[in-house]
Amino acid sequence: MNHEHTDFDHVGKHIAEILASSASREERARAVAAEIHAAGNYRWVGLYDVTAEAVSIIGYSGPGAPSYPSFARDRGLTGEVLRTGQTVVVGDVTANAKYLTAFATTRSEMIVPVRADGEIAGTIDVESERVDALTGADRVALERIAQALEPLFSEARR
Image (cartoon, rainbow, N blue to C red; front, side, top):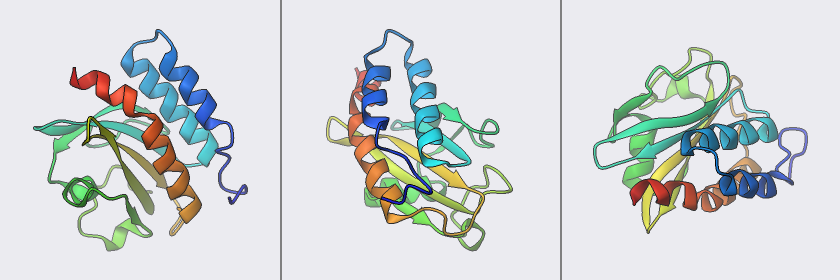
């Protein structure tokens, strides 16, 4: 794993502790986003709920709230994730017509689906201000984290 960019070695344990806490779901989502933000050295990290109607932010860590805290399921790169069921990685968002501009300085983005009860119930969205900043190691780590987040997203479906 590229330790110059990411340090995910202890994240799984920390996320398990966060998820087991008695904090509200939104507080736990913010804490998880902060954990990913710090470990990955990303500029911004967001966790989103995916419902039948929309995609909505539940927690983030970075320089501010996204421009689109809630949007239709078929919009942006998230729409592609929901259509394909696969992680989407874009090395330069300025060259991708599907990108919904959350921050003018974003250059690369990865959106990872989080499944609960067999369906995509959420996403992890990480962004960098550098082109091609997100690596295969980031993808492996974030997909592993997405699996660990299943309890956070399944509780919203009950």
